[in-house]
Length: 96
Image (cartoon, rainbow, N blue to C red; front, side, top):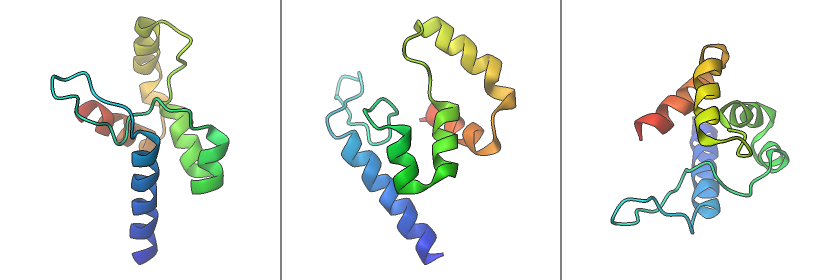
């Protein structure tokens, strides 16, 4: 259990560091700590957190070269085929 908690805290710290300059569009400019748009590479994630985390992040990462409407359409189209972990990540993002 201790190593799982340590790993989770490492991931939260990593996300906070990568998102320290990003703000939500609300009137208060609330900071992000887990927003997915950073310059982090899949290779960096794999080196730090392993191949399984990389695969989940790849599943939930949109192709930013596509128009927003197309990205949303693809999210819906691909949702059923996503892994359970990717579905949980996406659901947590949508609920937040």
